[in-house]
Image (cartoon, rainbow, N blue to C red; front, side, top):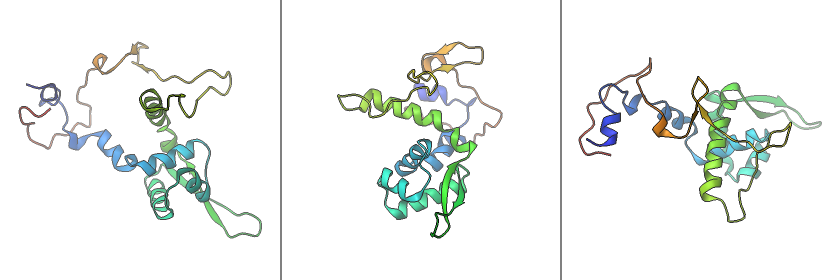
Length: 170
C-alpha cells in the first residue's frame, strides 16, 4: 500500500470534495495571483494593475471580473475631475484572508527560486520593522514544523463520491 493509498483510505474524503481544488478553481492561475499580489500592495486601478502585472487587457479584465464575481474583490466607483466614472478594485475580507497563502507562496519562491542576490521583495512589520515570518501552530500553541506533524481526518463536510484509489497510484 502506498502512502497515498493509506491517506486516502475509506475514512478520508476524496479529492472531488477538496477545498484546495475548489480554491484553485478561483485563484489557481498565474494572472489571478499576480492581480491579487498587486491588490495586496495597494494597487486598485485597472491601468496600474496592467502596468505592474504585464497582463494583456482582455486577460486582466476577465480575471478582475472573476475575482469580483467570486467575492474576493469589490468594485468601487471613482471619478477623476473631468473624466468619466471608472471602477477601482478593493479586496474584500474573503480576498484579504488569502494574504497568508500568497506570502507563503512568495516565501517559498524566495527560498528556492530567487536570484543569487536574494529575494526581490522584503516584508516587514510596519510598527517595528522586523521581518515577517509565518508559522503553523495548533490551537494549543504548539509550533508545527511540517506535514509529518499533522494528522488528516475527515471534517464535517467530508464527501466521498469516487471509488477506491487503485493500488500502486502514488
